[in-house]
Image 1 (cartoon, one colour):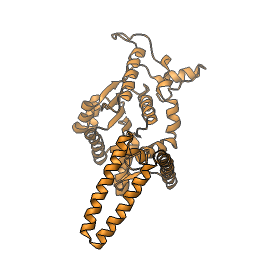
Image 2 (cartoon, helix red, strand yellow):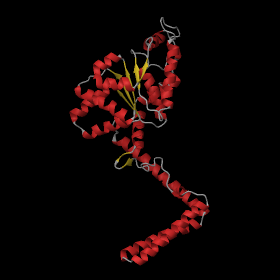
Image 3 (cartoon, rainbow, N blue to C red):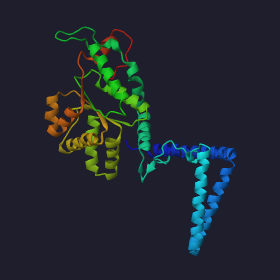
Length: 339
């Protein structure tokens, strides 16, 4: 997930451009303000002059002069406040306007990456990976409802298509209330039913609204845990933690296909537990049953997932097989090839 030097430089150029544009906009705004209210620059000049005199008085240790200048300064500030009140103006009109006020468009706060930088970093990595094109194909607008059965199976009350329409409504509700309601999703069901596809649908919607989304297949994630331990790279460890713990949404796809050991299982538990504590949403997809989750990941991790995640159970015929049959019969392809 780390940026290359070229990618890092490109992001820093974005922040430099933002600061330059902010400075230019502020200069133009102040110029227009001073022209509209010519008395204000005189107040500013009085403040600057008073500040210089107070500094000199402190150097000379002239306490009497300093006391008089302090009174004068308070009077100037009162007249300045009265000016804004009289004209129904705000002092914010003379302040710079940043895209991110928290870091003032520097990308860093207290020596650490700002949340806006992390989001930009993840968005850039998505854009420059094959996931960018995948998300253009796999989204809510491209769902092919003709893939789902309309017949009601024996012993059930609704068709697969009707059940899937409910699922999609639930996922859209998850997106719509993402900022106001903390939730986690667990996609369950056999292969070929769209678990990865629906995760990508959600990812695209949230990325388009400037949320940070991190995607890992379970195999890649656990392999990364192992590599970090083997290399003992503290910098990489901390960077991974920033992605895994602080991203708005973490997607772990195909849980159960990875090679796990005591260390990687412990790291996995740490990730899901810490995200629950921080109220950071997570989506997990798996072919495993509830009992298999308990057997494979132990009581601690499995209980966190089974109790704190909303279970989205997918069922029905394998959509991948249907797509292949459709292609063999010469029918038009579907965008649902992630199934």
